[in-house]
Length: 267
Image (cartoon, rainbow, N blue to C red; front, side, top):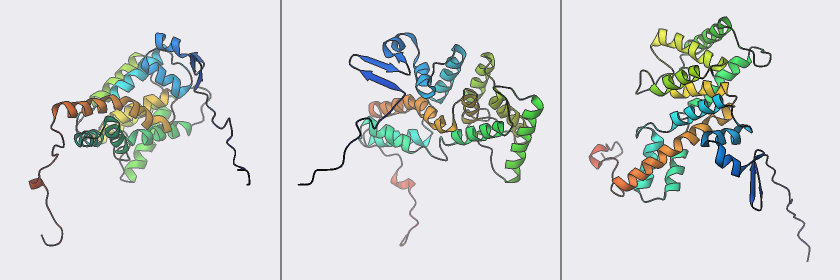
């Protein structure tokens, strides 16, 4: 009988995130016993994603960002999806999974797109090290972006909200970033664009636009934007799922049959 030639590589999985040994866990070079005692949850998320602990100012700003993502009531599709799935009797993990699957181009997708816009625009100017752009350079970039999107009849990502004329979350995280001295090139660009958009169309930054700029200043790549949003939003989703289970009838109707208009054959 021919011996099976397929062999599994004993060292096929490599990671620089955590090392697990008997009675010991090391994450990004730090013993988890020390991390549990000494840092906040937001600092741990930052460490995992960036490979280093944040400074005090970076940690505070990142924590503000996570809090700002936590919940936006029962209006978002993800929250309604979570409650609908939960109402059917599905377990919590299924309801959370359903909520996450509802994120897409129209819902939660703006942050990655906005980070790409800010970062590609700043990167188009060759900077040395962490050099700041001057006001003239920032204004020129903002005008170019505004003109480009306006000429194509497209909306600039990260601006406007269907419920808020001024998104209170966006306004607050920017205020806190200013207080912490954490306004970098990307946030300066976002604010310059806001001046133009508000002057011409009476529209302001939304939370995705504000946090996209701040996360870019913190050095996060666009590919992590949605992930950070998810980390922030999951507590709110779980709260809605729990409320649905505790306060509402099982398998409740989210619309009545009278609300459904049939437009098919034989109507």
